[in-house]
Length: 324
Image (cartoon, rainbow, N blue to C red; front, side, top):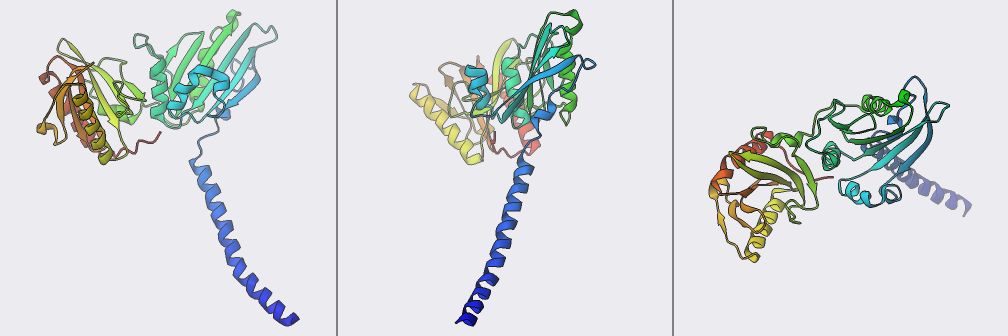
């Protein structure tokens, strides 16, 4: 019986070893893939010792989607809607006289388009941009900017004249630590520059023109002759879902008491109609996108602009996945 037991145990261990190897291999693959998908360490982007060491880091704070409310309370919803990943922040104090404080907050937004969306939601289009990152606004007292997947806020509370430029200096240091170039999101190339109102491009989440079926995408102001109109591009995971959203748009028009009319010159799913709050609209589908021109005094005013946007999307060859 002892020999039989040893034989059975040997057979069991022989079967067990490959299973263990497989399990360890899968664990290693999982850990590696997790590291690959993870973004850069946000903490390493905080300023070191700007201004020749006179500014000292006195405290750090870190937040995830689970506890962002504890830090920015009501503003957390906006960041979460744009795919917020994590925040690393630091509080800096000036020299021995303690006459100044600078707070640096670096938000990892997951991807460049999300960081752009947050930045534009806070930007005044009339304010001149600073030459920091892909876009920046501010002064000696505060700087907000974005670069790659990061949105950065730096606020200075400084009494001493020696530290009055601290926010700008720290902004440039953070910018230098963020890898990659300072180009805007590639999606902005879908929108023609001709007749575009400067600074008006927005990345919207939660409903373009107030419509939940147009969940997220770009919204931009244009001048067509003497008329102000709005162009939008809604992003969807697939062409089928874009068609579904377009049909929901038609149903909305029906329920509002207006009528829509097919415009096959822009594709079999395109239409024009009177929108209850946006005058005449002209809408078409291009792959996983729904594209439209709203606030038109008459439909002919939007035809050339819509064609240009559809052509730009077609030439880009992009296949939207609508991932935050």
